[in-house]
Each structure stands twice: as C-alpha cells, then as structure tokens.
Length: 160
Image (cartoon, rainbow, N blue to C red):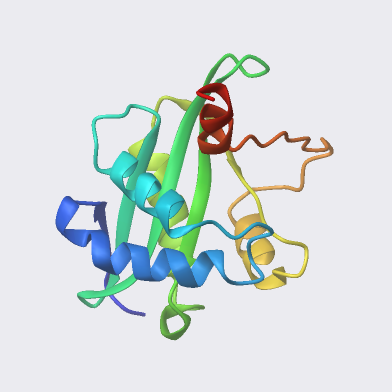
C-alpha cells in the first residue's frame, strides 16, 4: 500500500487539477461533459473563500494520485450539514490501491459537523460502487431530478 496524503487544493495546483478534470469529465463516469471554462470556474471556486466548495489533492508516495471536490449544503431531512462528494478522480495507475478509501475517511474527518454524506456513481462503475458500499454508503431509493440552466446564455438573452 502506498503512503497516502491529502491536502486542500492551492492556486499553484491549477494545471495538474484541470488536466485530471478534463480526463474525468470526458470519461464514461460522468453523464455530462463540461467546458474548459466551467472546469476553470470549479477549480477557482475550490481555492477561493467560497464556503460551499472545497477541493483536495490526493497523493500516493508523494505523487499526485487524484483530486476530489466536496460541496456543502444543509439537509432538512437530517437537520444538518450535507457533504456531497461531487468529484472523485483517481488516476488509473493508483486505482485499487486505497486512495479512494482514504478520501472517504478523510472527508468524514474533515467535516465532523456533517450529518450526511452523498455521492453519485454511474451504474457501470461497479468497482467504485463496491468501494463506497464497503464504507457504509448505500444506493438511495430517491430519484434525483435536475434542471440545468446555462447562466451565460440566459444573461446574454436578458441583455439584448
């Protein structure tokens, strides 16, 4: 097992993180690819003082093994903070070596005030689902419904 360390993202990590994000968002693990502009906004939010999103860099034996992004919200159902693991990308050479498990444990320790932890996985990503279930996660009976807006497009229309 490699020595795994995790730390918050820093501005100087941008090139490394964006490269991993591009691979992640172009992979079958994600239903919707995102533009480079959105990925840059995500990274910038992680290293800003925005209180709703945190970014982490994962290392194995001192080498960059992946990244994670966690967003925070309030869950009225459980009466407290919900930590949502938005992104968890492990570089292929570090998969099945405990890096993802270390991030799940780290997240629980980093957010001791959280009463609920959430994440998404594509049904085909069986290895990830098995890992998450080993850590106590279960498949929810809820159906996730979403509505996406392109705020750039909307603001352009409103200014005309």
